[in-house]
Length: 267
Image (cartoon, rainbow, N blue to C red; front, top):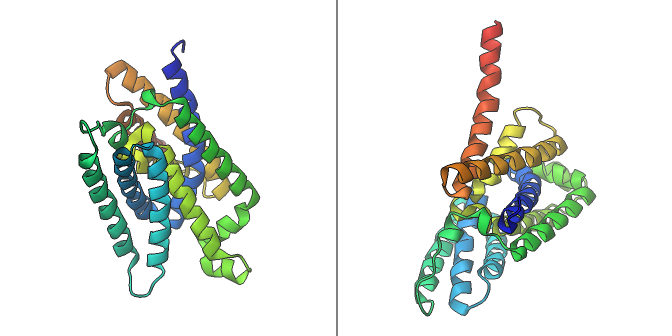
């Protein structure tokens, strides 16, 4: 605890758990996991562009991811374009542009492992501020508009019949998904960030089906997963991002299997 980088890791874990717990519940409820995966990989194009132009990669990744989110939302609503095809376009375009811009960057080719696989022990004060801003925005937005969000997540047609501006909410929520993904890149990386947005929610859903309860339980489970992953990373000297996801999966497996085994023993 006396090391600054570990203090940053604990704060970042808490903020990331809040961000992913809130927006991840919407992702799982709306079954947008594949879309989120597409935006995650599309953000790589923004990282490459940032390295090429000499601007902060996280900033350019955020802009690229938000524009990609709007592009996917717009294309998926067109009758001549299937949703999975729209996702595939931005998924592959982002990865391709990221690789091209990275290798065109002046000087030595930068180390992309921090963005691909993440390392929570290297997050900076700037990363923490970004996470805090996104967490605050999400908390305010979901607090003010929780019921319309629930209606949009479960039944778009009913929400529209109630006079809720469904399309506006969908674009705003897609923007929040993109910003949440980018804010967590330094923690677990492009390859693993989608797991942080889904596994805690899947675990929470084993115990409750209420939207609000899933959010709170997901935040708690996500933070426990981050702390457990940090413990594994410290003791076995393995990458922290992968350790966090691995421990989160162990929590899910335990919550899924243990009750069934206990019921079999009692019967």
